[in-house]
Length: 184
Image (cartoon, rainbow, N blue to C red; front, side, top):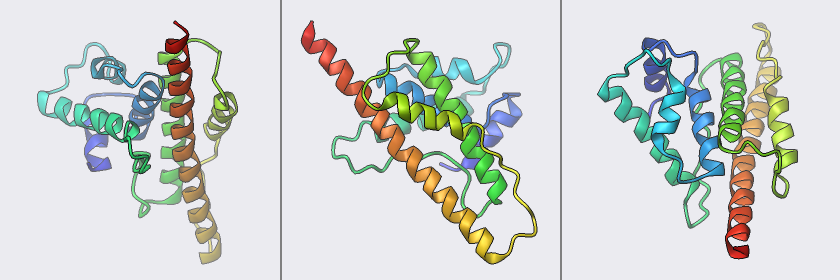
């Protein structure tokens, strides 16, 4: 699924969200409750007075369900990844998308879990994600190759950290949920 396709849906439907932020929102919601209804996610994406055409809605539902499936993989192949612009984009665009993804993720987690009772390591990981929302995406235009390479490596490291963070949070909430069910 192309990042630009999803971005265009948000642009033409007057959403304040970016494609990466919407994916972060879906991921956050699904990490807390993997049975989250796609309609709950869709309701958060656009102003109430906007009607999204069926073709666009189908694409968005597909993104949500693909995210759900990747987060629920039984074989732990870790094929889940953040939905971000390609690495051929300017670093500032990539960093901005990561920041938006983190904002969406935090909103999604908060939407699905109003408690401040975080299982396991989740609290620390959430603090790290909050810090990523403060990241400055402004990058100097006149970087030399070494500086550009360092930024590229940094972007990859941040993405990998977030990918693992998502899986950690998912697992922590799943364990907590399973523990509560066995106590009942």
